[in-house]
Length: 124
Image (cartoon, rainbow, N blue to C red; front, side, top):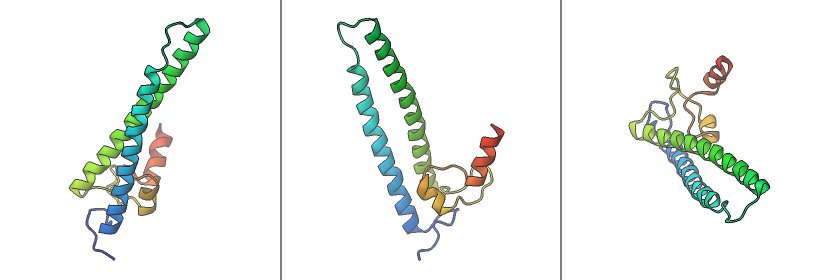
C-alpha cells in the first residue's frame, strides 16, 4: 500500500481513483448542462397556444431548477478538486476528522463525514 499523501490519510492510489471519479462527474455534468441549454432554446416555437405556452413555461422552470442544482454540484466538485491540490481533500470541514474512503467513493465531493452530514441535516 502507498504512503498517505494527504491530511485524511488517503494513499496515492485512492486519491487517483477519487480524482478520476470527480473528473468524470464534472465532465458528465458539463455535457448534460450544455444539452439542457440546447433543449431550453429548442422549447420556443413561433406559434403556440395557451396550453403550449404553459407547458413550455413548466419545462423551462424544470430545466432552470435542474441547472441550478447541477451548477451547485459542479461547484462542489471544483471545491473537492481544489482541496486535492492542497492536501486537504477528505477532511471533514466541521470536525477536521477524516471522511471515510467508502463515503468518498460514493460521494467524492463530500465535505463532511456521514455523521456530521446527518447532524447538519437534523439541525436544518
